[in-house]
Length: 278
Ligand SMILES: Nc1ncnc2c1ncn2[C@@H]1O[C@H](COP(=O)(O)OP(=O)(O)OP(=O)(O)O)[C@@H](O)[C@H]1O
Image 1 (cartoon, rainbow, N blue to C red):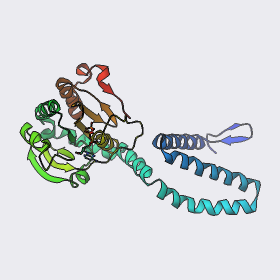
Image 2: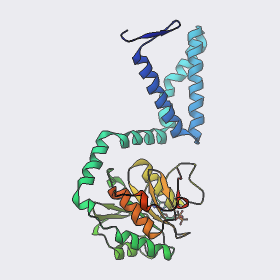
Image 3: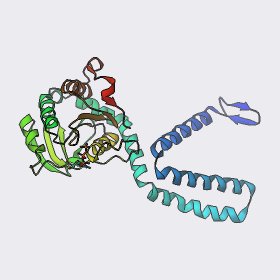
Image 4: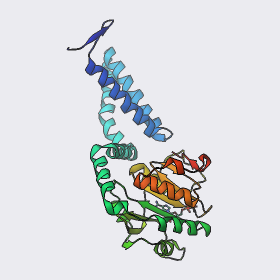
């Protein structure tokens, strides 16, 4: 083999090195995805049986090889059923990282209408809602398409204003439950259902509203604004990371940073205000 070298009796090519590195990365990603969940224990159980199968096959133990072989052949199908959620999350993670998705995100960022979006209504509404301990959940579309989630709610397609946001999240409003989705400078939909994060590291102090914000940010590149009903705290969530207890000025700075890539860090909140939840 071209470019191969030997370690003892082993002859290794560069392709083998790349192969091993890719498998290592794949297993590490799998481990990260499954860690803390019951699925990890099931996965380790399946891997142990597979290793045992390889050993007994190499040792030429016919009967055990046949039994474990039968188990392994249905194992792939069983794994797909058992790991439905994890496989979905894994594929979404890959999808999020693809060049195609990045190109779409880039295209959106060049959209002049999107860049001009006025964030004042969000900052003002969040401030008022927080002062009244009224919960709110607002997802901002970036590169990932949130149509699937918008379809789960009621289409609004309205110009964004503080008054509109306040009336939607008013506790007596029929639209206050669920999330509002902002797309292309418009309030696209309300009462939307977002995917709830299953991350076991999310603090118990965070309710379903925060979990839904984290969940959406794990599977898309959306930025999500949360006002807690319990504490009145304002948070922003991006890529599973929660920036908690933001003052209105911090919220404005973070929104500018996350939505428009404006110079961010200088206006960042005190480190205690930002917390990584995932
Ligand atoms: N999957 C979801 N998608 C969209 N909105 C959700 C989802 N799950 C919960 N919510 C919103 O969160 C509200 C209730 O959540 P919960 O009672 O856990 O919030 P909370 O106790 O006030 O916690 P938090 O401090 O996170 O606001 C619901 O009324 C709904 O509006």
